[in-house]
Amino acid sequence: MTLAMNEILSVGRLGLRGDGIAQTPAGDVFVPYSLPGETVRAVRDGERAQLVEIITPAESRIAPICPLFTRCGGCAAQHMSESLYREWKRRQVETTLERAGIAAPVADIIDAHGAGRRRVTFHARREGAGMLVGFMVARRHDLVAVPACPVLAPGLARAPAAAQLVANRLGGSNKPLDIQVTASEAGLDIDIRGHGPAGEKLRLSLTEAAERLDLARLSMHGEIVVERRPPQQRMGKAMVAPAPGGFLQATAAGEEAIGALVLAALPAKVKRVADLFAGCGPISFRLAERAQVLAVESDKAAILALTRAASTTQGLKPIASEVRDLFRRPLLEHELNGFDAVILDPPRAGAEAQARRLAAAKTPTVIYVSCDAGSFARDAAILIAGGYALEGVTPVDQFRYSAHIELVGVFRRAKKS
Image (cartoon, rainbow, N blue to C red):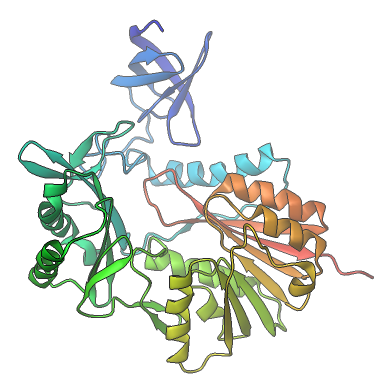
């Protein structure tokens, strides 16, 4: 492919991933870190280009908050004004629904950044005699060291240094590592992936590191090496210690916002609710303040964390739980018909198999929490074809400056006259 050097491009709009898009006779060209209305100089390679110079900046351009912006791949939008940023993220949801032929009102975006992200994954690789710890470089597989990150919650201020110390203890394996650090009410909770089983000598070294760092817990591949204090998270009235490396919403504010949207969408007279893909219970515990709950999740460790917390939490209606793979064994129509509402909170792949069963069931309300607008749109089309109406969609932004957006959609089955 021929590389055109120093081409002048006029940026007309933003793409879903945050790249500026310039129209040319040869087709659209995507220019990362450029904005609508800008004239830029770029190195073009096919439909992608590398920004070289901003000739005419847009009024919507602002100074980034991090000196690593454009090098570190964690953020895509620190250069956007607040109004452009919010409209870009909301438009992602609108465009995805429109492409799927789904008409539904999309509310203003909810800013759920709060105090910042409470979990982060560092990558670690051997470089020379030491271990390099950081984030991936934008659109490359190289690493950039990150001594501090402005989008993290204050509880993760020590996370880069902690990840570096842990990586140093594991450097002898010469394996690339993922080090997930989560801020809990008891301190840092670290789970290491990529190393493989640890021998007794390494476990002792890691235990000493946990003491030195005053960690709440340290684990490898989900197996606890040492737990000095339960790394609890507050979920409604409950205090939950998630499984090592287990799923957790990115920000506490995001979890609160999603929970509030789910509760607000419940029918007025709700008695029984199913929380599918329940994880360790961030939505279940909030639901149980109003209704009996069936929490279903494929991860046994997550369900164990949920049931432990439920057994010690006062003021809740009963929470039943079931370990079940909803991709292979979705709840069937006769199981679904006894619920006043069903909540879906699946991973990025969505919940196609479960949506098909819901489309054939009689459940009056379905509340769908999604981290991927594309899989949501696919599943929404299934529910709509089955007789549901999509009442509305609310975008929730807990990944500030990234292209990632969450959403909550509310479906109602029309009552027969």
